[in-house]
Image (cartoon, rainbow, N blue to C red; front, side, top):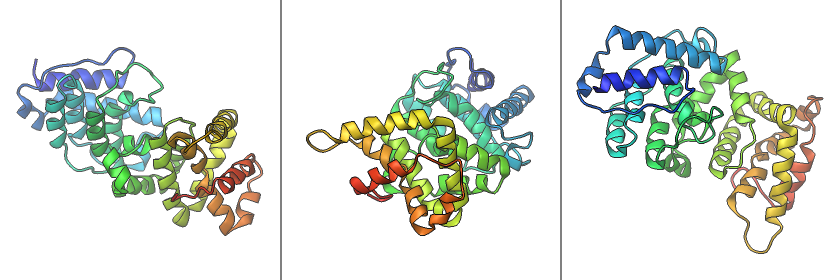
Length: 290
């Protein structure tokens, strides 16, 4: 087997990830510079499958541009995950991102390996390798979180620009609300969402409100349970852990929008249940930046 065969096997699996992901060697990696027609056709099929799962449309989020070799290299890297150092070296060869179609293809390879992947078939990647994948798959980083060093330093320009590109497309805006509204118990994921929504509320307040509207319409019970648990966790002795704080703070951008224009939320008749969270934000003095 060669690196190209590894790429083919992983791409085929990622198009329908209903079994444990394959592994393979990275020999003859130079062949990846010019994939054979079989691999090229499979990459196109994976892009179509990934776009369908995301609701991105036949032209992924309105982008009819080319899909580059990034997804193929990512497929080799995750196929070589049993050798993390080798896999990271392959990822270093992934070119800079291009358009949304290319981002969808990369996401199609990377998404099944996310810890919060709903399919539940992929094994976990080592954290360092996962962060390397997130650096070159902006749509994956947007849906989950940026690499930890980027998240901690606030160097998330690429991920923020990806969100802005999605907002400019009807399907992209809907996808953004769908992925950001899901309830999670992960402080890093919630911190990223809070940072992103805090940035977007200045230029795209309606898109931000749509995220919270989707959260209340689709997951009101789950969010209420998380908030109740967060209050319990923060009521103990000593400093609270980061997850309950991040759970409440996730709603801070919505509170900031309400302070800037109280009519905005009142005009949304289906957006309810948020006043309780605003009271919690005030009680614990939590803001977007706290």
